[in-house]
Image 1 (spheres, rainbow, N blue to C red):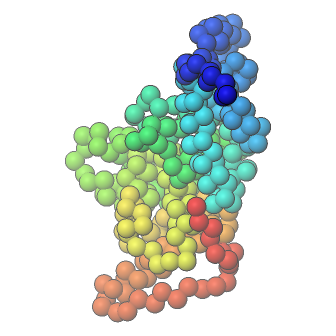
Image 2: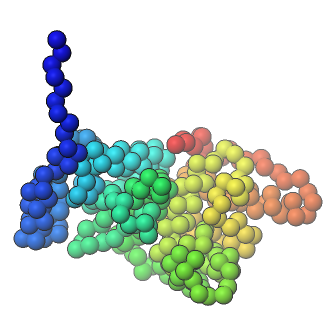
Image 3: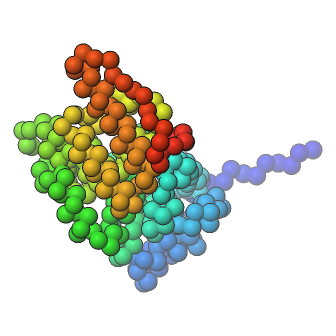
Length: 299
């Protein structure tokens, strides 16, 4: 005869309130820098600890979450981590700078974010089911972390500004902007990869890195605007955007191979658009030489 099943366990039983209270007390006494260690000791699940050991970085899915919810968030981040690792050449070098990953779903104002707090480089991932972060957004945030770590950050900024100028709209999300110019005007003025990239120097750099990543996913096929709807492939933007990508590779935001692929795809797109404007048949033959030899790995 089968044993009687155990009574259903409360989903919050994994994290009794005394553990959360002890976590808050520990932070108050020791400081915010102790959060990853305290979270690990008091709240983490076996699945969470296994992933942390594998990637070598603390994961913080939230103080008030049940074990089941923490595991859901950990699985989301594991998918993002693996997609980044497979498809981004310099991922190990970039991710090594991240001190902790926060996975929360309370804040609908962002999909992903990064911040330096008390010398710690933190990345925040939104795990809302209707607005969860994707791999390219994580790549964008790691670009912020890499930018903050550059030894010659001033030199990089000066060289970038010679290409981009200083005509950013500074509105954050363009929807909140009161300025009358269209976002495309700002993108053309700054040669930015997207409307969000035209906000500021920092976002311009991170969105250019995100573009290089996404172009790599489409390597091997003809680039069309529908591939990257947030990008305005304007003929006045592409030549300067290719200069930016070359600079990104020099400062190891991306590999030489990824930069070569991205520049080649943008160059082909520009030539095809010019040919069509003249009523000619575009030549889409792709050169095989260069550091981009070999197919791109897809997610």
